[in-house]
Amino acid sequence: MTIEHIRLSKQAREQLIRLKRHTAIEHWNVLCRWAFCRSLAEPSVPPPAKIPADSNVEMSWRVFGGRHAEIYTALLKQRCAKDGLLLDEETLAQQFRLHLHRGIAYLANDRSIREIGSLVALATR
Image 1: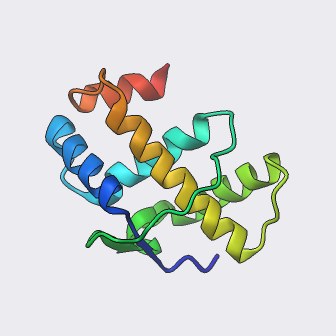
Image 2: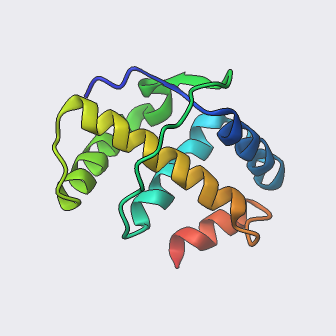
């Protein structure tokens, strides 16, 4: 997969700042992993949207995925296949952005997330 850099929208940046404050998770990439997985857990396909890359929050795919980058790639490909989408580079990159931003919004708007334990509880439901 050739997603090399990920730049977030200003809105996503603000949402991540709130999540950092509530969870005490200090690294963007860790929160983004939680968000990506949260969106993948939602059965609906993320609606198409034009998401601006207008913030100063940027990370490489290697930073996003860390030592599990291949697993995140496989999860994305599996989800795209399940949703009946192509597995070409453009579709994968677009779906990743949609899932990431949707997941950030879900986490930021979940009033039950007030500490890191809230994320763990969410994952074990």
